[in-house]
Length: 257
Image 1 (cartoon, rainbow, N blue to C red):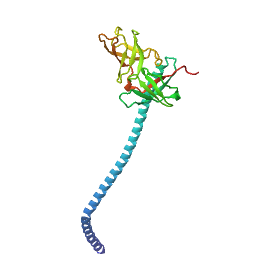
Image 2 (image 1 turned 90 degrees about the vertical axis):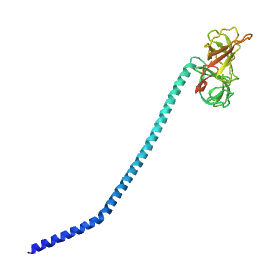
Image 3 (image 1 turned 60 degrees about the vertical axis):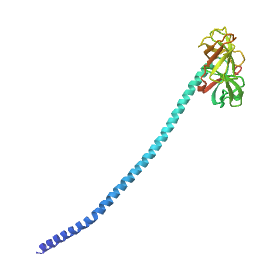
Image 4 (image 1 turned 180 degrees about the horizontal axis):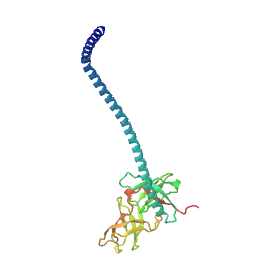
């Protein structure tokens, strides 16, 4: 009997307790679900945010590394191009026993009527006035002023420039003068001289500035007028002055041993 009474009391208490717990759960569940949802959302947002921050930092690091590698690659390409051009200039200038120095073009004259460039070699490098300046393509001009570390070069396209010249095939002579444009004129060629478009013009060696045999340009136009003593001849320079980066300055005398 005692056991039966205890079992009955325990069963009734358990059912009451279960009912009470159900009521509590029914009231608490919505807020608990809301709290859980909000907590999970905040956790997801924070996790996503910190993930994006890490990704952004990694992205910035990769961009910096890429920029560094691109800059390094560009520097190496420029270095290789410079070495190639220097090798060509050295090979060209080395054909003559005359000493020379390679110079970089560091500036252009700002005025339209003056055709002048500036190079990074001066009297410290034995560069002086009236020395000829060339590339492997041909005549560039001559030095008109030299300071310690730099020099000023008058291009053959300048209207103040004049180069004693001759036609490579016929050996007929004339004077190639600048026009202030990209085309030069060859003056004082007799009307009777046989000249054709495409003829090569080289330096004659007269005048004491340019050595003989340097390429000056190519004949692109010829005009013969009646009763004139000389032909009007236009010459395209062999050097593309818009693309000159390095030049050779032919020094005077022999190299000291």
